[in-house]
Amino acid sequence: MSILSLTLSPTAMKASYYLKPLALCTTLILCLFLGLYVMVLWPAQVRLSEVMAQYEAERTTQMQNQTLRDTLKTLGTMWQSLPEKKELTDIALSIAKLAEANHVRIPGMKYDLAPIENGVTSKGALTFQASGAYESIRRFIYELEKSGPHLFIEQLHAERENKTRDVAFMIQIGTFFKADPSPTPLNRRGT
Image (cartoon, one colour):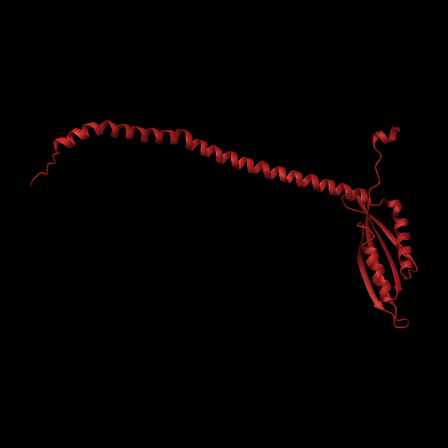
């Protein structure tokens, strides 16, 4: 077995003598860079990702809060537009006038008031029979539906009368009413 020996030329030996400190400095700089990355940059990146996740969570919460404020504002506006129970006769009268203006006959109405389970509002229902020409009925129902956001048609049964060729229908209109204000201790004292 022969051992392979490697010998450098004298010029290569002199050059390696000057390159050793440079190689040592390069190794030290690479180790320093790796140490700085591990000790400074990597924790900063981890912290940045945590802060970004927290920012997104806060932003989502802020958007939900804004949506909630907008919803509460809309509900407040809707609540103010709801009629009070004492306006039930006014609603029935306006429906009768609307029917008369559209040449629809309503011989009579009956109504029912029922509290809702949550106790915040109560529901009213107006039920009546009406008859008239098809065009008059169609126009009456259209104007009834667009008359206000608090009225809605719950039931509608229509049939053509054989004798007069008119359309007769049974309709139930529902609405919600504001709850009666409950007396508070301040209201009872008269202040």
